[in-house]
Amino acid sequence: MSPKIVAIIPARWESSRFPGKPLALLAGLPMIQHVYQRAQLIPNVASIHVATDDERIFQVVANFGGHALMTSPKLPSGSDRLAEAATLLDLAKDDIVINVQGDQPCLNPEHPKLLAEALLAGSAPVATLAIPFADPQEIANPNHVKTVFDQNGRALYFSRSPIPFYRDSPGEYYKHIGLYAYQVDFLRQYVAWEPSRLELAEKLEQLRILERGLAIQIVLGEGLSPEVDTPEDLLIAEAALAKLTQKA
Image 1 (tube, one colour):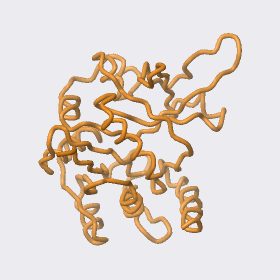
Image 2: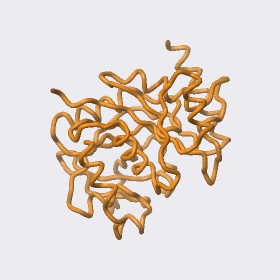
Image 3: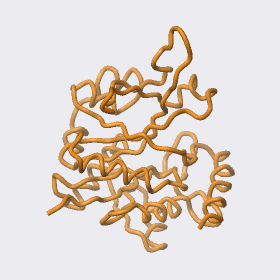
Image 4: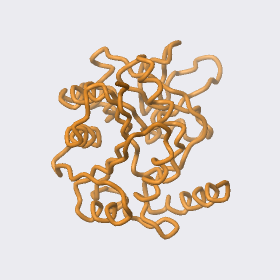
């Protein structure tokens, strides 16, 4: 039997910059509903679930006909929420979980499809997305994570600093997008490991994997769906949603 592909959307109420973000209205609908609807467009996905620790989010998802899972409020990260959801769903160890970010209401369904294909090809137990920086002004911003990778697309490092350092002439930088696909067995191992030295230094969870000498497959994508980090980002997301509606 082929591995099952499941999309899970971690969603929590607490956020230092934007509390209640999953239920913020975009074009008259809560953002989590837009994300769920975009996830429904991902090819070959067996099911979609919102993993939350908040009854308000759970109820809203149920009201629009989606499937939500209640997870522990004590979980330290979205990855831990993902792993608990995989257990609640009784997924097999070789099934694939796509971590869909709950703040990307204009998700390009082609991107998670490419990540799942990378895992099915057996290249690594986890895959994530990177795109070339379109705006050079973003490269120095520590909120935009940079990545470098080898000739086979395996991640060498992730950093909030600009990497690599081009000594003689300008070159291309790649922006890491927090969209992941994991083999379930690997996901369970990963969240059980203690945070690593470089992870704590950069505040980037994926470095825990590299510090253990394990592979992360980088998949290159095109185009970037806007992320909603603050209330001010809602206007940008609404404009992007309007363009998607016009194309449809």
